[in-house]
Length: 501
Ligand SMILES: [Ca+2]
Image (cartoon, rainbow, N blue to C red):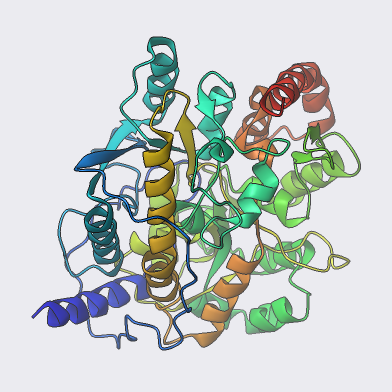
């Protein structure tokens, strides 16, 4: 019976995700976030257990029992005031087996660890700002009830203080070199030789927040001459910003004859919310901020061709008349995309579980390169959609915290993550093997920008809000903000010095 339930659940999830690779764009809330029923099922499920399962390595963890101690996780939530929480996938706990692949893998993982160590895993959701306040207040009072906090990337700037958090390196048993810790995140967000923030396979939001482009096959077919085979473009390293813009220009059509080609009555070429503008900047291989060889940070926006690139992205694309410029237009883009009236959506792979009604076939592509001189694609992990783990400074039982965190991460690597990647993300595409291949490429080329996550003086956020204002001129914007950004950067580098002494 259990197996039957799981197979039914698998078919259900596959059928749902088949229709589903469109994410909520930008910071607009997913007003379609709660639907989990009403699937018609019917697509062939691939086996839940991969035949090529990765052999387990020994995590080297001791046998111990903690007599019912609770491992308490504090997790971010963003209630957009529409009655739905902005969490597409719960990642820490699962109440029961529900026939949902990811839910059930999380449920099983927690039972394994709970039984093995005599612990209970709990999860508490709080609004994003309350997560920070809770950590900061607990640092002041010395009282803390959470072993780890899981915060959205853009909120972490408020936690850059050695009194609030302790480095992962201070926990016994945590071995950040193990494959269940995300090495790209560690490399980009490390502070000297230590880490206040990290991700492991205990989380899925960091994987689901990777940028990508979705394109509607039916619209593309109508413009075959202009579009051709986009997968071949990607393979030939010809999927560039210029090509993207020229396709948009060829496709956008003023169908209702009102002199504009970005409205309800038109064939719209391109939609994204506001934060995905960073995706194109990242796609150019650029970063707002990066580590130097000593582990301190340098602010890179304002140097090299960063300003010029951002100006071009805005002027040629974000302010073009074929772009539906409405940062809150999630519903618009969903409806238009499903109705074959929108060619490109730029968002994250996170939306895979959010869309249910799209019958038309669509494909997935990496974010275009800015220049054909680039040798690779860069797909940003969006700090507006992702999650980073941190350890409150007030955690006192280091042995318990470290051991259970490592054990959960280890177990997730072999159980939860394969389900998430193979089934929820790429398993949706039996109709489109190319799209599955593209998703693998997207995952393989993901990048973290510390300047987006630890947003210095909020400058990266200021940039993205120019989507709505039509005033690119990034040189003057940078001139206005440079001093504040550098002040914050100086504080941040002092923190790094403190943490490493
Ligand atoms: Ca029109």
